[in-house]
Image (cartoon, rainbow, N blue to C red; front, side, top):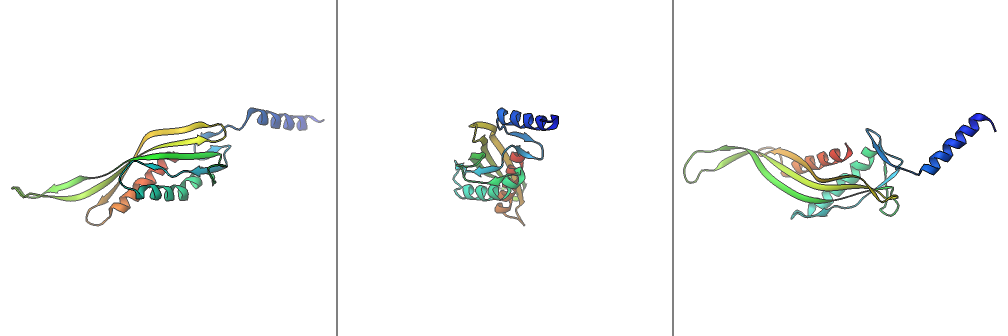
Length: 165
């Protein structure tokens, strides 16, 4: 057997014996993984629509961003699961109007704050590859010209980017 063939065979044998380990590499997703399952997040908020909205955006964007193909939970190399912990709407920017007993404030800008916990699991080895127990994203909107839904979509996109990064 010539030397180059032995080198190739020994490299293959070493790779096979070492197992299939996944790791994050900047810009390349999960090394060694080909498929991903995204389980609908549990929802601890009163906003029931959040589960489906987050699921839809994650299914559209997360596999492509990580360089993986979507798959069912039972056959996927990697699984993403989590919980929606909080959803808050606040008014960080407002202008007080006049004084007196019936004074009100004019809201200029509102923000949607979304907090989730997320786990990325290696399904073959049953290991947690990455975890965040309080991933928070904020989407903002101008009261006069934008909607809460736009800010919510912005916050969900930021969450996905945080997971990918």
